[in-house]
Amino acid sequence: MDEDELRHLMLAAEVPPGNADVRRAMAAGRRRNRRRTLAAAGAGVAVLAAVGAVVAFEPLRAGPDAPAGPPAPTATAPAPGRCTPTLLDTPGGATGTVTAIDPGGTIAGGGLAGQPPRAILWRDGAVADLPADATGTVADVAGDTVVGYTAPGPGQSTGWVWRGGAVTTLAALDGHPWTRPHAVNAAGVVAGWVQGTAPDDTAPVTWSPDGTVRRLTLPPIPGVTGPSTARDIADDGTIAGEAHGIPVVWSPDGTPRLLPLPDGARTGTAWAVAGPFVYGSAGGVEVRWDLSVPTLTKTSTLPDTGPLGARAGTADGTALLPGDGLQRTAMRIGLDYGGPVPADRLLGPDGELAIATAISADGTTIAGTVLDGDRGRPAIWHCTD
Image 1 (tube, rainbow, N blue to C red):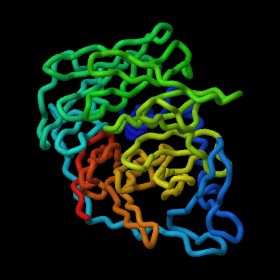
Image 2: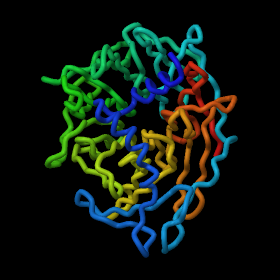
Image 3: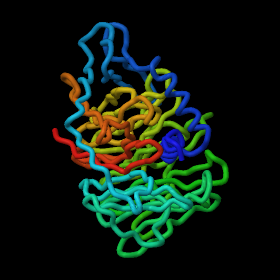
């Protein structure tokens, strides 16, 4: 496997279902530089109606200030020294990726390259035992619960959950034989999706600790088609994902709420939710939605690090930007509406590019993969404030 194939595999594992979405993501990456600054003339903040909500967009990146109005916050020069990488061992030095980290930052999970791929777990930086039935790739870890999936072919996956010493296959729905878990919260509720035979025939679901599968309600979006998935679930039950290719959050009672799109964007994905913040992408722009404002949804664009948007984040607004493994560096970027935004580059021990995929609840531990020639090297970064 060469370096380009490795990058493709790592990125393809985390894009929304369906080949059309891969093409949209890559095309969006080529368009993103034309969509980075979002501002209304004479105000420095763009306010518009989108899916029934009023939206305030505030640019949050290095570059020209918004025309007129108070200066927009900008990212400081990325600091290379505050996040220190540590490479994780793999059996026999196998190529691998890290896809998940627990909220405490002590347990990481991922997969090893092979036919078939093998799931792997690390505790405190050392390889930990997984049951033989826990195959494929680890999707998420929380407490004593590990979720993952095996993918026998394109658009096909069978999800599993390991807890209480037992591995259980996740239940499917009629007409949707494939299951794909993506996140689990402290209560053991798993969020993900089920998939039919068509690439976009997906439905967002949750699985309760007793194994019951529940289909999430989709908001009405006339004339729109696209994948529908659940990507993350907070401890209070709030879920982030997409409905027909449009970012959405579900409240703990299951009520869906479409998230506003930046000007010119037609699709997007909410990757993660933490506290009042939702992280994702829309129209090729990395986005952090702030849901704490009662009448406004404050949305900030973030530095351009590739087609996948803001992959994860914390309850204090720290965003994890995965990078693209080619030219754009993975970054941890903080939140400060009143001044420069602290940013930290995530590189390998010898300055190699990396793809970052998960962050601990306090933002100090990050999991990802260092690109080392034709190998993927699982890694953990420990960061200081």
